Each structure stands twice: as structure tokens, then as C-alpha cells.
Image (cartoon, rainbow, N blue to C red; front, side):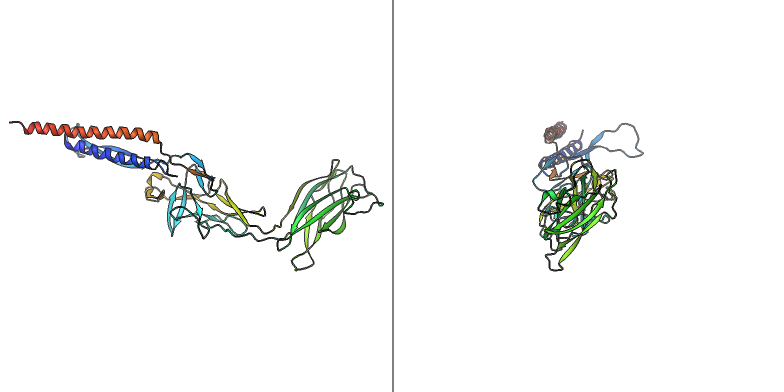
Length: 404
């Protein structure tokens, strides 16, 4: 026995305690991953040495590896917080330097970029003005926080069933929007001019004395137009083509007296059931103020506006590595690519082996605090035992020195 074995044991135990202490210190760090010390024995032998039995000369710390197992996911009150449920890393950019993290605590900076506590910017695929995500080369995600401009209504659609059992009001009861007995059904929808001002288009359905024939009247802001005639076959299917009508809506912008809105009625039916409307749609909207953000499981960042509209502003990119243990820890919950980790493989969350995004949540540290405390006791005992071997060797040496 020599001092070398005990000294190497003390050094290895001390480094093990360092690793355990770091794990304990980061047990509450979002996105942190536990590490472990991996040991290897040491033998003073050569490749062509003689003999088959060698005495070990101690221990060394072969590596300190991080364990990239999934941490628990905890909900938060921030819609911009994100947790990765599965494999992958967020891709961050700091002045062009690319790093990777599992910490999904993000907020908006003054320029609208999604940033972490260190100021790094989250990267992803941008979206155009119409909300179409443009996959390709990831870039820094920047969210527009301004109002959404209004859009004038051009087209609309009405899906309704006209009651085949209805009785025609008759010639003695002419159409009057203020007389409910002069028509058999009515509905209305809001449309918008180019400045986002709302207008109301009402549509009235009146059966004629001719079987399977209906008259359709419109009233745009109370201005009545029509009738337009629509016919159905004996099975209740609309046969009039084209099954559209154009409504002249009063224009409050000053650009003209009216603006046209085309209504598609091709999905109307005439069955022997009560009048009902199953769908109303139109393609315009008023101006809207930003009311908040939401993030889908595929990483799409969606802005919500007070006018009820939503708009995709980009999609978060996740990156995976062939060997995550080969990443270089940088501190601040960041890792860097190395030759050992392999090249980064970027993709959409949920695609392939990549995990999905859970918004309004963060991934907690995967450190098992109970296990670490038990490991700490074991490492302490190992340290004491190695110290005892040095003490025993010292006593043996002292006995030899005292020989006369």
C-alpha cells in the first residue's frame, strides 16, 4: 500500500462531492440537468509488461457527464414560458453566437424579440404578414406588438335551410322588413368597410306562389334591395346558378356611395324542417389591438387581437443532437455544440424524435434531491475511508523508521 492510492481516492471523492454539491445547488434551476462523476481504476502497467497480476495504484475521475432525462413540467402564469416535453433544445442567438438551452423562461424585450434572462434571442421560423410560416433557415423570432389593420369585406357566405312546408305570404302581404309575416325567414351578418367600420347586412327569404321558388331580399344598413329569385328541385337541392348575390353596402369612408359584398348562397337547402342558419361567414374585420399571445404544441406563436382575429407570427425551432452528452456546458443554462455532440438537427416541435412545446409551463431540474443527499453521505464515507488509508500508511512508515 502507498500514499498514492489514498491520495487519488481523496481527490476522486472530493470531485464527486463537487458534482453532488452542484446538483444540489441546481435542484431548483429551471432546465438544469444533473451530472454524475464516472470513475476508472489506475494500473501501472505497460502494453508489453511481464506478468499477469498487477496492483492498482488508485482511482481517477474518467468523466463528468450530464443526464439529459426529462424533468417535471410545472405550469406558470406567463404565456411566453415554454417547456419541452421530450427531446430537443431551444436554439438561442446572442449577437450571432448560437447556444442551446432547456430553460424556457422567455419574455419580450423592447424591440419585440423573445429573449431569456441572459439576453439571448430565441430563434425559429418567421411568418409573413398573412401569418404563413416560412420554414427554412432559423432566425431570431420577433413579434409584432402593434395593432392589426382592418380589412374590407369582399365575400361572404350563408348556409341555411328553407322550410319546404312554409306557406307563401301572398300578393296581399307585400314584403316589408318591419313585418315578420311578409317573409318566411331572415338572418344578418356584420361586414366591414376599408376603415374597419361595421355595417349590417340582413337577408330575408320569402316563398313565392310557385313551388320550390324563393325570393331573397337584402337590407344593407336598412337600405332594401331585391328581390333575387332562387329555385330548388324536388329533392331540396338549389338549382339556380350562379348561387350568389351582390349587396351594395353604404360606404362611410367617403371613397364612394357604396362598396360591393358578394354573398355565396350555394349551400342553401329546402327541406321539410324549420328554417335554420348553420353558417355565416365573411372575410373582413375591424382594426384590433393586441390582447395576448399563445404558443401551440408545434411551436407556432399566435397573437390574439381584440377583434377576434389571430395571426401566426413565427414558429419556435427545436434542435437535437446525436450525442447530447458531448455538448459543452457554458453556464446560464446554456450548452454549445462540440465535435463530440455531432451537428445540430433543427426541426419543428413534434416532428421526428423532437418533443412538443407546452406553453405556460417550464421544465424543472431533473435532480433527485433525495438521491443526491444519499450520494453525499456515501461520498463523505469514501473520503473518510481514503483518509484512513493514508493515516494507516503513515503509521506503517513510522514503525519502519523507529526500527533500530
